[in-house]
Image (cartoon, rainbow, N blue to C red; front, side, top):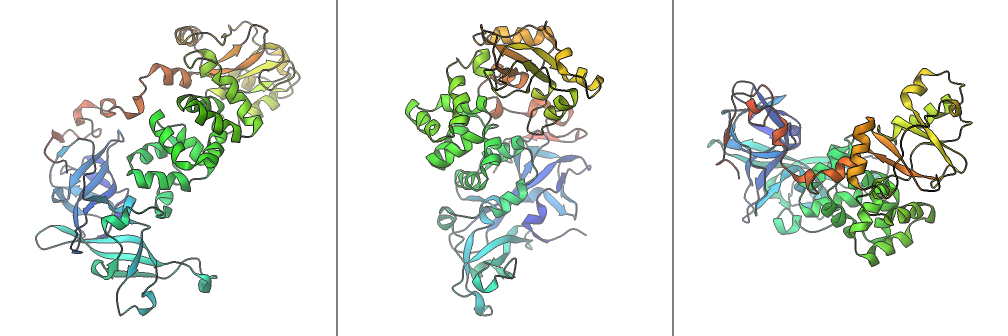
Length: 449
């Protein structure tokens, strides 16, 4: 049976189906319009994420039924324009949840003059088929008197019973991001970066500040340069230095290279010297050379290491697949710049050898090496010639300086704004960029909010 009353958080992740059962995408948020007269906000529509990760607006008038596992539309015609939030619109899940409000309801005297958190919004359909926000689920903040309780009590109240959900109050800083963190838990850093960019500026910064250093470093590495700079500059110098310190040295160098010299030096001076030194070395090279693209922390072994030890090193979950594809054999010291470079060992070969075999007897000494000054064109041809995803960068004195991976090459070959470009060309044309099997869908331009 189709629901006429539902909590907004229950909609998140539901598949959106066209009239023929074709999948369009999944619900990611609910777009509402908060009124200045404190009347129930009108639900304008749904924020739907396509398989291409583009987010579009689907008006609520297009929704014919909300089922336990899906949202069904009454038409296969949807606008594929990217959603742009307009003045007066709010995202229910991204912007209203975790807001601090007050409840003005005599029947709940314990909540009078007490700050509570919004944890969900109850939307319902009216007789005119419009949808409005009618109820709000709130939770008491845990206080000293509730030390043994994990969470405060939850209450569902009418929208009119709340104070603190005006647009002006929602734009005040300091809002919690617990609900957002829960939504993003378990996602890859690249997916979190994409979602972070879709948030309003205020929530974007609040979420960034709430992530721990390691997680935020991984996310920042996946952002376009302009967004990286915005996030770092909003963190404060000390926190920004901690996050940059947790980044891969090559990504940290790329970011610092985009900052004003004085600002970059201030951040470097706050970093641990052991972490800042490889970043300083990378900053000496032009960004579009092997030295500028390389990471200074590849897998480095001595000839006395065994195959078992080598395989244990490449199993490190923090290594990218490209870096894990090859280990480099050197004379001590093994920290870059290393002792004399001897050659490399391919992961495929390690898998075929007995565990006790020494890697010194497996070294590929013939693979060509990249010089740190090699320009992007030379690096690109190198990877194409030898069918590699990782290659050594060695200086004139035969010291291993680092390694270039194919993802770094692609990052420099693609336009600077490649993360921001339209993704719709990557899906079957029969669905107009929506979903495979959605041949009934057609492109329209009038349905954007």
